[in-house]
Image 1: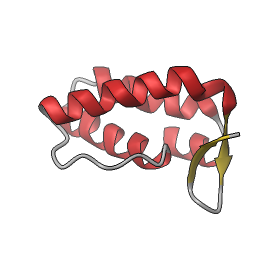
Image 2: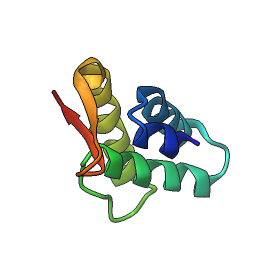
Image 3: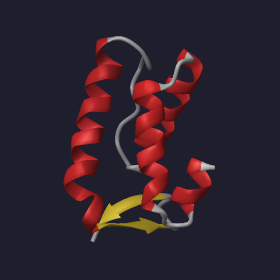
Length: 84
C-alpha cells in the first residue's frame, strides 16, 4: 500500500516506508522498506540492508525527507520523487 501511495504522488507513503524501515519487528520488512524507500527517493541502494551501512542510509534518507518533503513531487517517468 505504501508503494502504491507513493506512485500516485502521495507523500504519506514515503513516511510509512521510512517508519517501517526503522521500526518494523521483522527484519525482512525493515529490509524491503529501506530498499524501496531508497529507490523511490532516487538514492543509491545499500549493499547490505542491515548493519551500519543500512542504518546510515536510513538516517540520511530520513533527514533528506524531513528537509525536502514539502518540496518534492512524484515523477512518474523516472519512478521517483524529485525536488520541485
